[in-house]
Length: 489
Image (tube, rainbow, N blue to C red):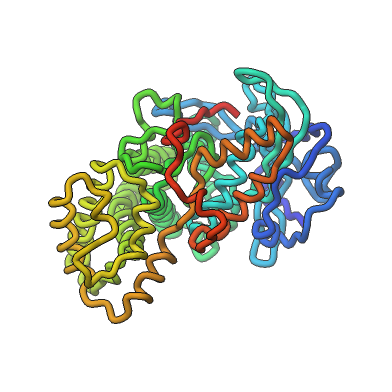
């Protein structure tokens, strides 16, 4: 790895230098060739294993933990920071630089009496979901590797420590700006310094002045809206949308008790600590806006309120437009665009209504979200019979919807091509929690990572027919349906 150290060298006072602590008897549990290419790496080797398990120094690495704050479940925590993530620097790849972080590398000044470790189950889940989301074209951080060990750590019971090697285009979060607004003296100077750095590094098309600041926040709002639209379209629940877990670039970040929907349920809660359902699947669009408003409040010392409000007002139309376009591709509506903004908004509204009626049908019939959408690739749109019809509890309601759906799709010149296009937008395989859990159990009980590797390979080609893996596309068994996970890591 070749590093540059722009954050470390230019933002003194925004981090603490801290060196990771190695894990004993490290071993590769998983490795992503696709992520490795982003930073110019080839295949894994023993020297790299020693460096990424913190048992040897990585040449050119600086090692530091960033400081930030954040709103957690609606309440403000003044000082958080990287409690178990240590950044090596920005690795230079063929198409840009990526932060390399050891998640689970030991205690930092921000660990809050914690051990700074990640347990194997959470490290494996983050590795899998990072690469699964990337294969689904959802904006996300990446995972280069997951490294296991026999180092014992204690949570509810004794477990073993592991490290996820995370790649991120940036680790700057909403919470960075909150910290330097509320928790540091001289906030305007620090806020301006942080904002200027963010623009120079990640928004180089913008200028570091009032006009650039205004447009920067518009782009943050819209990238966040588009990220959440992708979540809703693929049926992904993040589970812990605190402002310290929100990337300034609109990338999915900091995975904890995430889940992909099995049975479609707007009220699905994947985090067993979320007793009030604040971060339920259907709440995610509203929470995204709430978090952006907290970021806007932190920016008021340097960006006029009118500019911030104007940017926030673009959130809902951006999210709806992105979501509707994604669902059009899934359902086969085809494009619906025009030059007039009001007419376009009306077209989006009509299609959103048809999409919402479809998801209500799925929810009322307790149908699997991904499998139901995959069946779109079996529909002969000119036929009165749909393979989904037999799955519905209320057939008359479905028939009414299907007639409207056929009318919206219109004439299809080549049904086979249309079906193939649906299969390119609707994955056959998603990372169901029970599949991840089975892979974790095999590692914990047998020291066998073969299911992990099989699952990783499956999820890098989620749209492809892989007949030997058909069982992994089925609805989960009863014990695995809608698993709710813990934040513990």
